[in-house]
Length: 267
Image (cartoon, rainbow, N blue to C red; front, top):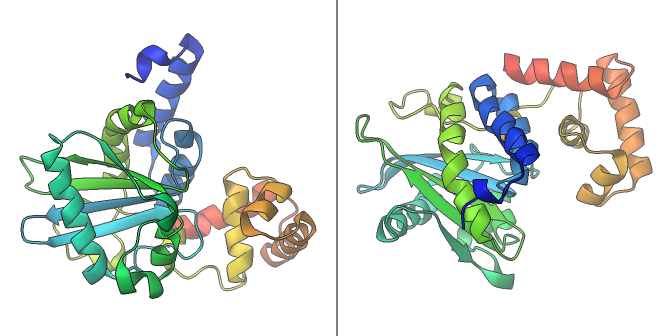
């Protein structure tokens, strides 16, 4: 089932606006907001893992993009994550290099002891489905694999088709952002996730919880919505935001997000 024929004229215009925003991505923060914002309409997901390198030898690097707390590239254990990515790349080839999905059911995606060592492992145990697609780089010799995980029970045919259609734009956007510090020596494509989501220290004046709430504010979430996501009350969220306003010397949410965005882009 194709995506575009199923869209109305208005939806087609919206889709065009969303994908063309890929050329406007210039920072880690831009990338996170774009993927966790309007892109969710076409490719709903909780975690995106981008991997690149020599999959035949197992020498691959990865980036993780997610708004989930603690799910960060630098906090992941590459030695345990790489075998999964290599195996998925092999299966992608067996599927004719077309998008395919996996359903994990209630058990989630387990990486053995890895799930006990990082926030990513714990988050993967809560994921119920995944869709996998890749890009073969014949000229640069750096193949890329993209895996999106969702807490939903499954991806639909339309969403798998959407993966094929939006992936070139996601790939383009990621290549416009510089490497993370631990990837600076690599010759592979500049695929990075949000600095705010990759173990980069938050502004000293903010606590981890305050920074986490501010990131959801930047994604357009209301206090009740943030409270539901973090399993706290809307009143608690409001109190955190009042402290954020005071610490950042701002008077509203837009100003707070602006200062936070500027800090992340500077980092």
